[in-house]
Length: 285
Image 1 (spheres, rainbow, N blue to C red):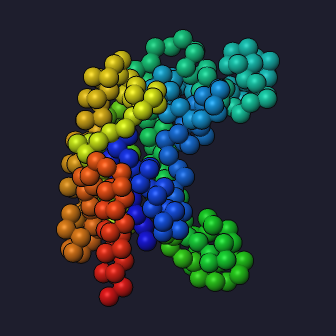
Image 2: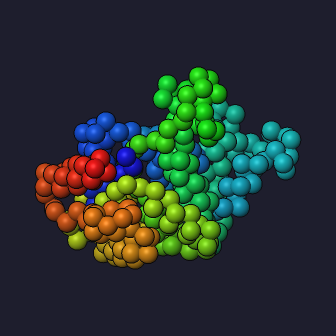
């Protein structure tokens, strides 16, 4: 079974996804904005966690140039002096630091946000479309049978706390040029592969806590600006859901979309479990 949660930041998607993963013994998609930011080198030097909003402060050309410094010079001393290349750290970390501190002005047209959104969308879909051997041989195989034991490959069952529609909404907010016709069609098509999509609306509650990245989401200088940023995201998600082919009536054919309107966590969990069990019973008939 493929279960997805969709909603603005801080609306409880990850909490519910972890609960469902444990309750139904499902793997949870590990690909997220923090993991992709970390892979790109945008890392908190203290905690080691990825910092996705740092991509908005980084100059894209400086980032690409530093990643490929060997194409410009084979002299390591030159690279160390110009780009700050350090053999003791991943080149991605060096590139991210130089792109942020290189001194060039950064705006929505020159930042690393387009690279980030494209990479995030591709990585999440790639993880969710991998084929699995029942004996867990080479989880990234894409042929019809396992090349180790010969068994047929299985489509994965999982839960994810973010859908391609979430990725598209953030891309539309930050760098709309990334959302090409191909990007849009791929996001819609993949969303229709889920069995259940749970929408966590902003109106039911938002829990940002003290997470600086979430509180300062979208570059908001204060809570009011941050609130409007998340509201815009929620409105975009509602529109994208309506155009995705999901069905709010779970008795209809196609992907069932269930709105989680409860505020209390216990009530939310109860609603989600009941919806999943009803969907499983319906599919078993």
